[in-house]
Length: 364
Image 1 (spheres, rainbow, N blue to C red):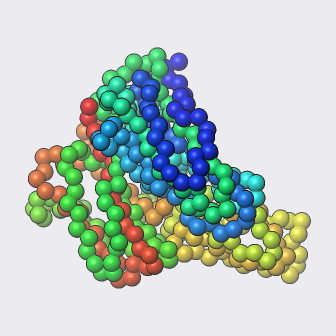
Image 2: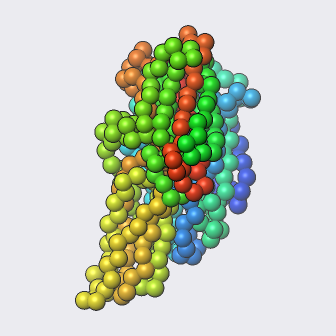
Image 3: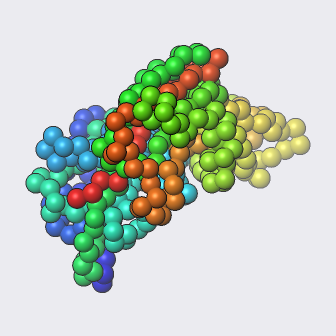
């Protein structure tokens, strides 16, 4: 076989909170590393956050050298903007069921990219550092499981020129009509810029009014767009993505679900046909930020919700050139100064948060 799947970390309950350190002791180049995070549902209750929020940080390091660093939510969103498809999420609020999320680290433009892969032999002591809180999405959790697997090059010999490095480079609090100025790194070429603009009652395009990228103190401005222009020109053409949730409601309950899509959501609720009566109340779900609320009903037992929308985890992806062509990406290494300016909208919502993430080509 040219390739093989490898288990880098066997399934394990990590406990309530902490940071787990995992040695990458494989010699063969890796095309992808996948974290599979699972928690068990104990009681039916509102979700407090999307399930990947249980993983607050995924770091790939070599000593003090940080090679990759994103949260679980950022990792999923970056995977979507890299490949146009969301990683697996299995979400349930049924007692005894589990919630399971796949959090990938892609090192190439596609699976088994021979030019871009993570080669552990290029480093001294590569490690994964996983920071988690099992209760972040649901406070009733008493059991979790983390598995780390990857796809490695086996009999196929490759000499990758580098790998895709991704990092959150800044977090900040958006202010209404305020400007956030960020001097951007110029160490490696840019493939994707990803902006997370979050609020509990707004979509990301309502939080972020304007995005501007300027070279050499406005000598050249390669990007100057409103949030909604970014949606129409970049995000919308990727199409909607869907998520399904298994429900466990009674007629007296309402349920708040923190899900992945955060803009232009649609939710279709499936009900148990055996208990639908003529006077049953088909109340429509409501949306606020990433929260989908399934209203209390009369005489109905909803058992499944199908949600679709845009902008995973409040993230907006901005590509630089043809994502399949290494030579077409934004080479910032020749610049002396590069600044990102973000303007908050007139109303940035409740508990707003902003983050700036980069995916870059890191050559060996």
